[in-house]
Image (tube, rainbow, N blue to C red; front, side, top):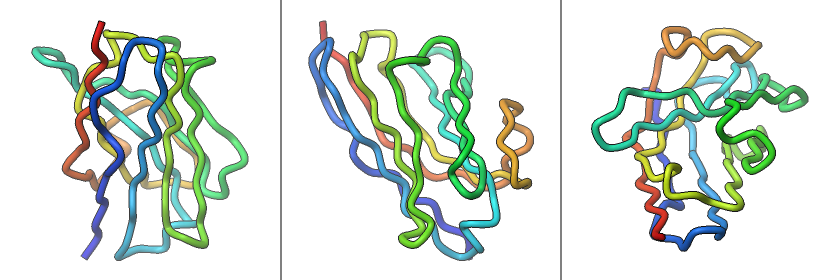
Length: 124
């Protein structure tokens, strides 16, 4: 029933920008925090950014702070990640995830549903 579908990934040059989207359905989207996480080749899953249920409060991993912006449009049941000044180390499969609370956390165990991911590749 719960579905999360990421889109917007692709190939981008170093320093470029990309906007990821996550279309959500099957639950009360505006009642839950959401996050983005990523998995680089050969690496574990890394929490990237989270957003409060109403979109007011946002949180970022140090590695992306100042470059990425998370947002949501609850009327459209959509989560976004605007990525700017991309670096090769940002190359990863990016997932959106549904939280279990109003507040976002960086603990991935707090997220109970995950999308299939969208690939972001930053070329040097």
